[in-house]
Image 1 (cartoon, helix red, strand yellow):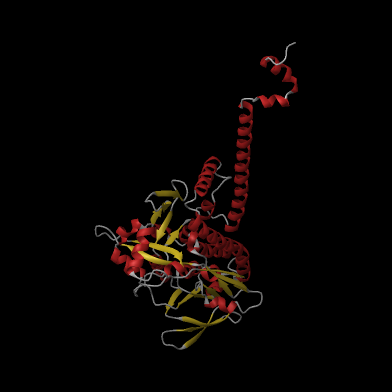
Image 2 (tube, rainbow, N blue to C red):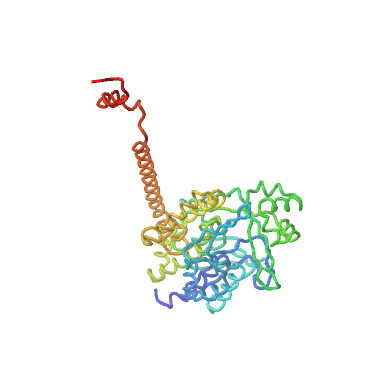
Length: 447
């Protein structure tokens, strides 16, 4: 496909969030005409609503995608390194579980600031345009036509060569693909909700801290008054009250109701050579592995790599994208659900911490053979489903080793106990050869 043909290709991206705006940068670099249709107003000029997003954790996969469009250094400079997970016990004890080695960390990133940076990057391309306040009302992938409703409330048909759905977990583009034969879809809400709280900066500096409370909806529903909230935090999170402040804590808690979390899986991610799903539109996941944004950014990077491989041929790139990404994105969805259980139930377990220490020890001894699951997912581009398979193998090896060690300890202990136990007179009943000696020594027999 030559450059003149590329310039004739029009791509419509539905959704101007993180994945949509990043995708626009990748595609605009290839000289496609790119138009983003975003239902919201421009977040750079409107006041954002607090409490409806979860802070982002940027890791290796996301950084590689940003690096490919020249934004990594700018974004990383704004992030706050996080090297460990801090466990706060009810007694006040704090214990850190490192995410990786001393040199490895993830970055806490503001969703709003990152989205603004990406939109600014899109607008640097003369062949890319963002249409704010334009909502998708109809999608016809077969004909390559979408209908959008702008601020004038007049429906407008737009013809394009490729429709890319980056419109989130409740994707409108996906609802049209769901009507196609052999399109699989499933969703699952978890029983936990989340609520954002804010720790204000100290000493007047501009370094506030956003934290997120996760707990079952039924627990949220029990907290109806200010006293209920303060009593709850005093019981379970006493060290947070001085940091947040009682008045601010109550105000934040009742600002918005707890938000739900959904996991979405679908297959396929494409329709012929006309339509493609990426990010949450293809694989919304719960946030407990910190990979939602990173997986979406890697979608963009993988598609860009396929465009290189297949010389921008949509008919080759789209099916191959589905073939590669479906097992990986389903794998990270499953891992996120697994980590949801781990974080709510296992992080205080001594056995869990012991296993983590075993994994770190084996990784230090054999770094290329034993790699902790978190390291494979967060600090590499090992494919998600391959990381899962390697993790299963490692668990079998570790379990087998621990079982063998336990067996050896038990057998050795039993042997030593029997070896050094003092014999009783009854023992001689099982030793006929020693009966005569026994009776001689006790004086019951004379020869």
